[in-house]
Image (cartoon, rainbow, N blue to C red; front, top):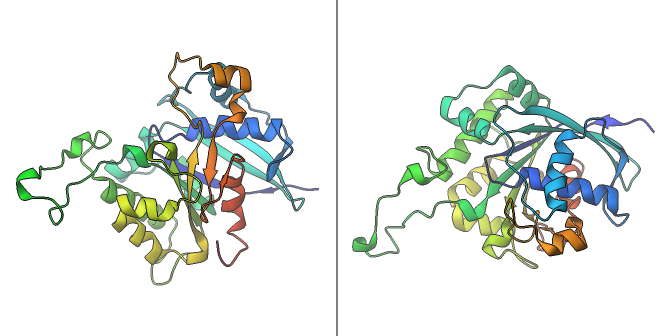
Length: 287
């Protein structure tokens, strides 16, 4: 069966778990026949994947992608309905996303990727979001000015940052905002969700609404309901360091850890559902 190409644009700042997810996803694809997607062909370029997998197998955390890395790995995936889809996985340092917002300058490479994409995955480290004091719910004497420079090392509050990022991408893609967007479909990933206790039965959309209500409202206003989804993702399920050498990961295998929380609150160890849920929104009228 011929394969089709499905450009997915993965977006996320530093420390959002993109690299850990890539390693764990690959291990699920090669080690399990109980996943929603299987690997059709082993990727030709595996360096980036191996660099993500090797530390996990040693019980250590994955190193952040270096700032000079700009590579693409193509994952050839076979879905349950028989489709074979080639998904280009763009490896880059999260600082590049910060640069896009701060400078409003998009490289030719990124411009091409944005215009080719039909599916967006936006990774947000919910545990790393800055809590802003609410003057309507706290005594004035307890309020303090938010130190925006503590927020991801720049002068942007989280709400403003993410709205600006999405608006830039919408502009690059030449999309109007007179009617709700259907392409690209957008899946917001609440990454490292174990840090906030998001588990079985939890609602990823409402968890993000608690922290970024204006951003969630912005997305709900501009995206068609059937083309917008929110999921929780814990690629590792537990905290690792670069020297932790976690016994559970070493002896049980890293593919025994990590989980996804689907929009309906279902919890699954099958991390491939993060991809299939996104892809299925193309054809479904509701999520």
